[in-house]
Length: 474
Image 1 (cartoon, helix red, strand yellow):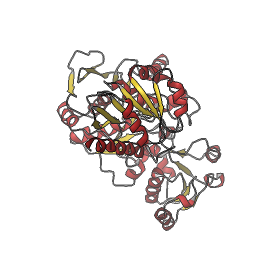
Image 2: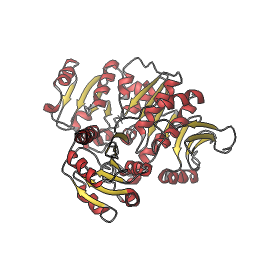
Image 3: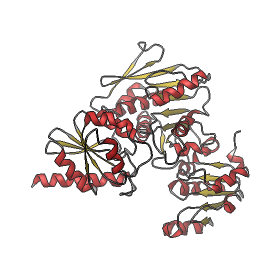
Image 4: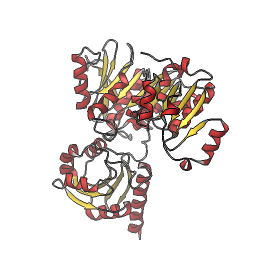
């Protein structure tokens, strides 16, 4: 049953925002413009909140409870806006749902409050790069685009402003999709699905269903861009086809119209992305050259295919797309070449926080690798990496909480060494690497056991590599 949030979020209604991170603060700003009564339920302790934030909330007469989420507060609400980091199964939210109180995330606001068309991108890996690239391609085609969501500016922050963009490009996580309500992207992009966040989901199947829910509210004429070469997605599409769902099964990254099944297919031919109708691949094909761009190496070649299909669906021309591809700058900490020291290349792929991302990174490497990995385990297991590690990894330098488990997983696949911190890991990797090798930081784990974030981890890697360069220069 559809929920009309515009009818619920009227002046005087009581709305509880659960979680006071970046998304939660943006939700408060959005709700202030609606004139509703706002309360905040924050799991952290009050002394951990920034003083300026506490003063601002007090000035706006927002009630704040800290140190947990009480059923008393949440069941007093007319609506609950929950932040992505808050598990939906906590007792207070369950009590609210039992009373029939809507529990939604910021994506659910889009149906009733967002102006313009939506392109939404999800997947276990690559979604930040593809979201950013789609925004660049739209801008380069003369369209005014907002890029945000799970990266950059939260959707609620955009909703609180003048909404001047004709296209809203959102990175969406599985956590956001779980509370997305009637969220409907006119173009939905699903890049891949590999094990991740299994410390939050009951099963891998539940995680897969969360990702696939991106398409559940699409209507005839909307577009899905799906990676049919991803075995998990292909299997899901096959089951959907058996149940007479509108999604057919094809190979390759493909774009489909959910109304009539007529679609476009993308494939990689050397350094060119070739786009053609799925049923007539040799008729009126378009080609986009990736050579000489930052997208010429896997997995960015696949990212480019998905982005091109998405913006073609939004009416961008081949000429404008090609120009923008040439000028695209990759996001930091995603297979970024940091330096070459004594004939060895050093790559920062700190954003690779799960095994699927590391698989993609290793698959694209053309030289032997010394892999720096480890951190906080996310529950996905490491089995899918073993064949590539055996084939391409000369040695592994393991750090963090997961290092013993990883050492056990890869003991028969490659040489294993341990380090206590990043600087030591880089110095040890240098001794294990040979001229022509690559030292790759691609952790397959979260960063929070040793670092503030994956960005901080990557910065420490860059700093350590810079130290090697200074030693060589002496």
